[in-house]
Length: 468
Image 1 (cartoon, rainbow, N blue to C red):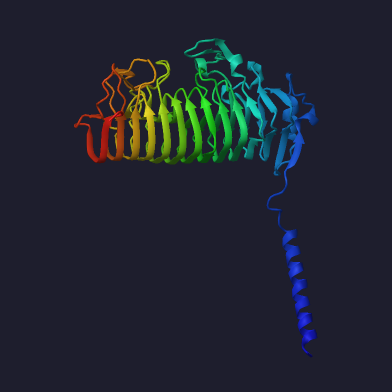
Image 2 (image 1 turned 30 degrees about the horizontal axis):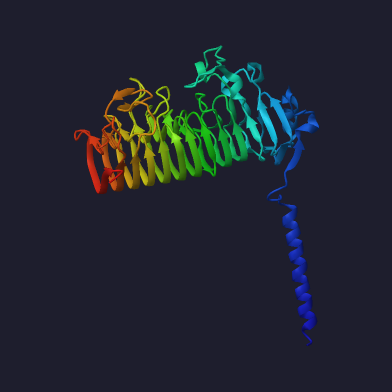
């Protein structure tokens, strides 16, 4: 009993010392996740009437965000905020509320002098930036149409200096250039006049719960272009657009660590395409749990410029491909791999260690695997695949489509899998089924020249009529 006061005093001292230590640590450290400051563009004079330009108020709100602290710049709903190019800075996230809409300007004077900076929203050399909020960023592509054409619309060209070519001289919608820790979430990117979401030389990118919608007859309105950028995750997205939907490109540096999951795609070109800008390597990509509907091509490689491709996985993918029109590249191939050089000055590149597993396809044309003499396809694996070949359009068949470049369109009967210039291919647990079609010969499951294809392995491969 006599020791109780001593124990009590010791306990009290421990409490006091602990309190002082905690206070000291708090005083010398920063809060881990400070709450973002929120600024409204309407407080800076934005009208949101869709007629008057709000470029200056929007940029003023962005510029008023404090440096080195998170800041949300809000576009209140309802409202249509017409703007020329606005530039994000580090720490700024645009919060476009559900029911609000950013409208991209349609005049050349709405954009910077350099065509490489023609975006409605762009971040350059920024970190911790993004866009979200449930609203819409609208590129107003219909206002760039010079002439309607049911096959492919003719678009405006702002080609004044020769820095861009023909129908590529239009503004992109959203771009993140040389930036880090980018997040695009819960937003709709609508009717881009050119490419929609462009990630360039950036690192640590998250694109989630995002809807992209582009006019099906407008050329070059790619969905997501991942260019020279690394460590990118795309998930739970819905992409419905005329040109390539998800397109990694390597123009000035390699592209690695790209993951795309739980995504729905429809494209009048390729749903997923590696290339055709391919000067540097592509490595460590995973595409999983993806639905591809009514696209001209499903999973495509267009390796033209000497960059090698390796360690790519496609898993749990449901593909539907069809013919649309010869003006658009593709003839309904569910899987299309080519490594032919772009021209006589281009290097040939290899494509190796590619796995396709748990793939279901319903297509108007066969799988097309074409390496080149010094750009072989190596170690391709096709495992657990169920492929049905059915004609459901009236376009003429009997063509192989090498485009862009290579041999262009070549007359050739339909084969379930056409192969050339391959070293190592495994086909395991693959079922091919053919519907009856009176104008085509569909019973040619495999076609290859033994002189260009070596080291082939087949295990449990079946080909039969759909009705049998």
